[in-house]
Length: 201
Ligand SMILES: C[S@@+](CC[C@H](N)C(=O)[O-])C[C@H]1O[C@@H](n2cnc3c(N)ncnc32)[C@H](O)[C@@H]1O
Image (cartoon, rainbow, N blue to C red; front, top):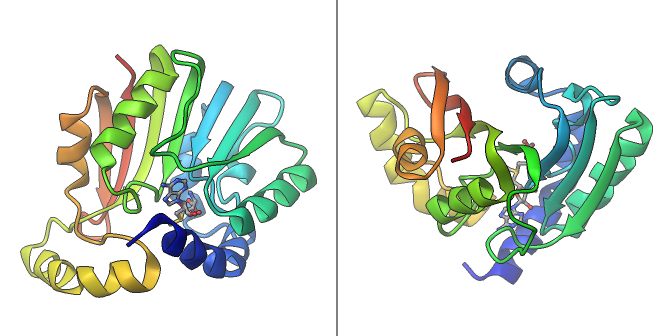
C-alpha cells in the first residue's frame, strides 16, 4: 500500500483513536509501561495521544511524530488540555531525520504493526536515543497460541487493507534482531500483546 493511501486510512480512524485515547483504552498497560518515562522524550507514531495521560507532565519534554495530520491535530489538542509540554512533527517515521543520540527515552505503542520495515524503524529509534537511553514498546503481534497465530496469518492481508496494521508480526524476534538491548518483556492476550523495556546501544 502506498504511503498516501495509508495516511488517508489513518486519517479516517482519527476520531476513533481520539475516543479511545480519552477513554484510556488499554490504560493499565500504558500506565505500567510508561510510569518512569522522563526527560527529552521522543514518541513515534503518537496517534491521537493515547499515551499523553500517562506522562508525568513536570518530568517530560515531548517530541511526538505521526504522518497523519488528523491524528496529530487531536494529539496536539489533548496535550494542551493535559498541560504536557510537547512539539508535534508531521512526518513519516521511515524517512524522518532527527539528531542522533538526542533523546533520553523513546516510546512506541502500537506502531511496529504499521511500518513497511519494522526492524529498520527500531534501528532508527536506537539511533535517536542517547546511548543507554530507554526505549519503551507496547506492541501487538502474532500470538504464542498456534491456532490463533494461524488465524492471524490468514486474516493479515484483510487486516492490512482495512486497518493499515499487520496482525502477524513476530514482535519479540524483530526487537531481538534490532540493536536494542531488551531488559524486560511481558506478554498478554495469548501472547499477542507485548510490553518491552529496552536500552539503546
Ligand atoms: C495503531 S495507531 C497507534 C497510535 C498510538 N501510538 C496509540 O498507541 O494509540 C498507529 C499510528 O501510527 C501512525 N503511523 C503508521 N505508520 C507511520 C509512519 N510510517 N510514520 C508515521 N506515523 C505512522 C498512524 O498514523 C497512527 O497514528
